[in-house]
Every structure is written in C-alpha cells, then in structure tokens.
Image (cartoon, rainbow over all chains, first blue to last red; front, side, top):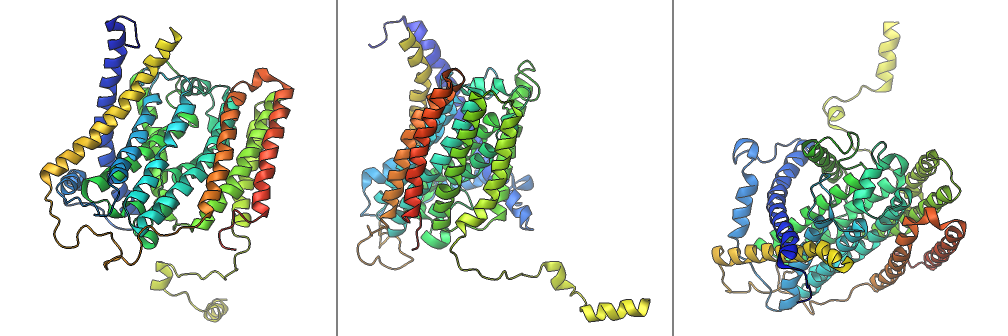
Length: 393
Length: 124
C-alpha cells in the first residue's frame, strides 16, 4: 500500500467524500431533469407559448416521462463506428463535468473536498471535455459528427483562453487561487464591481464553453444536423444532454462564487448554512435564467464570427485587463482604479465587438420587420395626420 | 504528511471519476435491459439526411483548426505562468510586473502577427 497511516484515518475522508459525491450526484440528476422543465417553460413564455402542461400540474412530471421515454428508446451504433472512441466519448464528456463540483464551496461548511488551488483545478478540469467531443466526432464515422466535433473542439479551446485570462485578472485582485479565500475576500463588495470586464468576458465565454445558443455552432441543427450528437440515440444522447446541463450548472456556480460573492456577500460568514445555501442557489439561478434568456433572444452566430470574436476582441481585452490590474497593484493605486479601468474597457469591448468583428463584411441596409401591433393596426399616413391636425386647429 | 494531506484532498477527485463512470454505466445497462434492439435493414449505417452515405464518411476539414490549436497551446502555456505570478504580485514588486508585461507583450505581438497574416480570418 502507498499509505502507511492507520485504517481509520484513510476511511474517514474516503467515506465522507464518497457519501457527499453520491448525494450530490442524485441531487444533481434531479436538478438537471427539472432544469429541462424550467428551460422549456421559460423559453415557451418568451415565445408566447405555454410549454409542457399535460403531464402533472404545470407539466411538472414531464422530465420523468422524458427520462422513461429515453430509457426505453432503441440505442443504435453505426456498424462502421470506432467502438472504443464511440463508447468512451460519453464517459469523457460527463466525468469532467462532474469532477468540477468536487472543489465548489456551496456554503461555508459544505463542500465535497477542500482542494487547495481550487480555481485552477476547476478551470483545468472544465477544459477537458473537448477531448470527448473530438472522440465522439471521430468515432461516430459520420460527416456531420466529424464537422461538429472539429467545431466543438475549436470553439472550446478558443473560448478557454479568454475565460482563463479573465480569471487571472480576478486572481490578481484577490491575491489567491483558492475559491474559498476568494469568497471570503468579497465580504463587503462582490468582485463584479471591481472587475466588470472580467465578468462580461466570463459571461460570454461561459455560454460558449457550455455550447448553448447563440454559441451552439457545434450542434447547430440547421448546419451540421446536431453535430456530434447525430449518431447517438436514446440514453447515450440523454447522457450528452445531462453533461451539457451539468456544465451549465458548473459555470453558473463558478460565476456565482467568483463574481457575485457566493455565500459570503451580503450577509457574511456567520448567518448559518440555510441562508448561505439559499444565497448560492439564488445567485446560480440568476446565471441560469440569463443563459435561457440569451437562448430565447439571439440568433446563432456564424463560425467565423465566433472565432474572430474570441481571438480579436476577447483575448486582447483580457490581456489589457491583466496589464491594468498589475499596474494598479504594483503602484498602490486605490481600489476605485480597478472599477474605472475595467469599466472603461467594458465600454470599449462593446464598441469593438461591432467594429472589429463586422469589418470587411458587405454592408446591407437593415430591413425592418413590422411588429405585430403595427401589422394589426396600420399607422395613418403622415399626410392624413397633418390634415387631421390642421382640421383640429 | 503534506503528501498524505494532499492525497486526502484529491481522493474525492478520484472518487468523482468512479461515481461519474458508474452513473453512465448504470444508465447504459438500464437502457440495454429496457430498450428494444434489432439490427434489421440499414439501421446501422451512418446518417446522411436519409439517403445512403456517399463516398468516404471521414471527410476533409479545414486546416485552420490546427492553427487555432497551436495558438491555443501558446496561450495556455502562458496561463500556467500567469497564475502563480498573479497570486503573488503584491509581494513580487515592480521588476516582476514589468518582466511579465514584456512576456505578455511578446505573445500579444505574436497574436497581432497572426492577425495581420490573416490566420484569424476564415473567409479570405
């Protein structure tokens, strides 16, 4: 044996971590099932629909019905597919998504394991899933899957860089790579105030990392017919969906405790685990609602727009952020300087997104689509209005 | 002892891989037991919009993916250097800051060169 310590000493953390993980996995699976229900409801309301209503009150039993439907669905594998790559891909996409949660502090006392350098660990592990997408794309032996896999890998690695650089900026301000210490740092002011640019870059890059619309280019139905998911059916497909939602939860939690203060802000460390857990869940839910809102609001980007946005806009701005943060720390400027430099850069980010990404594209005049209200009741002609006003006066 | 403590902390990471693999395996086995299976007809051919696949299914794709992968590699290695520097910048002083600015500047110049050469442009 590697460990020479007495059996009890090893057993205790082992059992602790195992129980915590199993409990967390069960809660997470139910959470993901109801995230699909919630997503369908929210997106339906945003599109003037009702969403699921027939299964149970408010359609609450819909995810359970979906689970049984997917479990009893025939699961096919193409005869020419690479057996090992095809089967392994499901595991390689899901396991990194689950591994992220090992280091996440849910409340001051609730975490599965106290990993030192936990922020670095979370970033490293969440970047692993692109291997699974490459394997799935290559192993499926399908043209669409191969294209989707390459798109997924290119997108994941491209947006990994600005995500990491934004986190470097946060690490500079707090002076620690430990997520727990980072939360304690935010007891009065959350980091979103000091690092608005880092927050914006994180928000954009995290949508790209979880491949949700408008960054769902690897799985675009109208372009690559589902991408890597194309040859996966039944339960394997639902495992891909599961890992996608788990990833979304992971990034929402990461945003909640890095930028919004986690369980610490605004009530402090001593309020008890109930309120702290509530704070974490509320902040996480804000991010998730934002992701759903974005999905319902924006059309999908083109692949070249996506790549040039990461490399031409997000990365230069995140490097500039690192420079300004370092300057402020080394020359002992007051904390307000963070807010000023980062806020100005955020404004610059918004403008340059329009000018840099769209440069060189042919300009087309905007075509306005009449809204429903104007279509129903056409506005009177200006001449008629002028005549009516003239008659009134 | 530090090694043991470290091992204790990362034990949960090892366990997470087992629990994750177990969850997927359970789901696959349950589907194997519950779902119908048959290999009749052309069910096991690759999907291509409803017709039989034409030509080689492992098609060519753009070489630009490789260039982005190389660029990513450079910046990822930079990130490895940046994290310890960023966490200790308060104690490191002026010299460390300007040295890292030089390092970032060289990489940014590389990115600018790639940009100028049209590497970041997909449709020339």
